Length: 359
Image 1 (tube, rainbow, N blue to C red):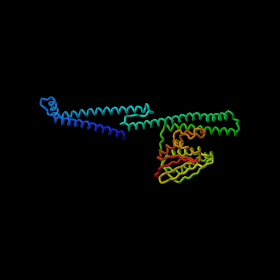
Image 2: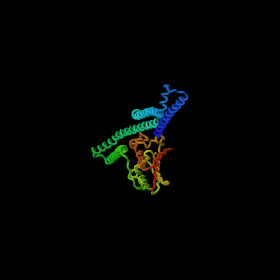
Image 3: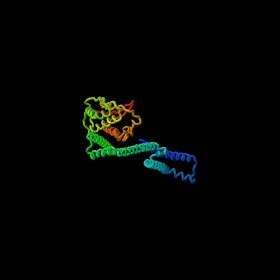
Image 4: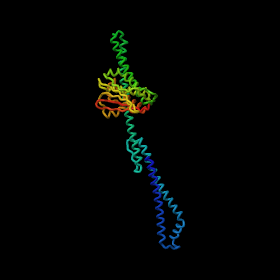
């Protein structure tokens, strides 16, 4: 719209200039004729012969002067427009070669200058975000690759002990086997995190929509987490309205709830409740997960849905993740046309998912 406004402005200025100069030529022509008419001319006067010739061919001469005027003005504007185009082309090149330097154009091109600077600032911002995300991803891959060695070494060590010492007491054998199994499960979790990073960056999530009883799905998922909650000395506070249906991809949505519950478990104080509420308000379905834990600062809360962002990068490897769970959850929810929001105050953390449902 701004470019169209600039074009109209330049065309209007061009037309007014042409009309103004042509009018000026006619005025000079008329004034000259009036002045000449005040003088007494004689047939043998050389000026009279010239003026007589001009009078005889006045329309031709007038037309020629108008053409000359139009030609000069047009050339002048074409030169100016060419200069403007060159300015814009040079400014466009700066966007790729000198993106950090602001674009400065002529006063007439201020609107385009503002647009180009907005594009430049957006490109610089996106570039910084991409670099930060890439750096976080690389750091996490290094961290995960290094962390793979610990459980793998333990698994190999305990299995080697069991193979080299067949006479180990049954109680000790059971202990070693249990430790090896726990380390193998942790190894599986780390490998899955590698796959999450790869899938999140290389593929688009596709949905297989079907009608789902959301109430039953949530009840089942929550029940499956009972052993994990018990292990962390946590308990459920469920308020799930019955028979709420939703058109969704059940596998993808299960992953959303799984990620939100695991996040609540990892960041809850011991001996507290995790609340899960499912309600329907008009045509909106609300799912709320709330836990009691350390209050998240507004700065960190605004970034919880970013790729590879972890609330506490120093968390133990047994509970830390790749920082993709909430980012993936947000993408899946938005693909369903829903919204997901986070809030934290007074040592509580809550995530609310809202879907629009016409069933």
